[in-house]
Amino acid sequence: MKLLESLFNTLTLSVVELYLLLGYIMGIGFLLGVLEKYSNKFLFKTFGPRGVLATAWIGTPVHEFGHLLQCFIWGHRVKKVKFLQLANPNGVLGYVEHQYNPGSIYQQIGNFFIGMGPIFSGIGALMLGMYLLVPESYQTFSEYIHNHVSPELHTSDYLIVIGDAILVITKSLFTFENLLNPFFWVFLLFAISISSHIALSKADIHGSARGLLMIFFVLVITNVFTAFFDINTYRFVVKVTEYNAYVLAFSSIALLFSFITLLLSYVLYKMKAGW
Image (tube, rainbow, N blue to C red; front, side):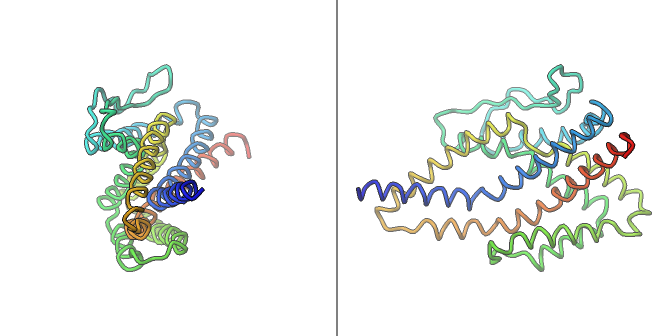
């Protein structure tokens, strides 16, 4: 009975640690997926396939680059890459084919990050675009991160971080000066295109799930091992997951433009339908 109780406690601890380590980024991915799903739905109803393809020129290569970069980081062998294909009969706009060694725990864990790659590359591209095209807005956002986001933030403050970050970006971007700046409109087109293709496909989610299972397995084995030496892994994981405050703050830019894309696609759809 005591063995079963110990095993149950280990599994419970591992689930909690998995959530603390990766739950927030998975939540962001899920939310971006919902926003993109409805955005593309309204665009398709309004313009047909051309509505989705119009943003694919920028969004899809950024999406696939996210997969490709993570393949290199986690040691997967890349077999074939297609950054953009517009005439695929199955509607697949791009893909990265890769192989890994099933005997390598490191490469198996990499499946999770490879699947999540488009979220990282999408956020990175949005930040780079802001830095190059609307540097004043980028500077304002950077100052907010520097002054208000820190590892010491309590998890209960994370929603406030996202809300405040979105508000800061919105106020700094949509100014009278920027509306007269042609580079702002270039950035807006760039951001909408990326946000329209930042979410994960079913294949991406399937690949990430394989990696997630391996991460969970490693956590369980680690917790079983450390229990014999009375080592508290939970405190270590909590310390490591202080990065979540930064993940959520930087994710705010992707959430903002995904919401803007959804709003614009809905307005266009209603205009075509005659309101």
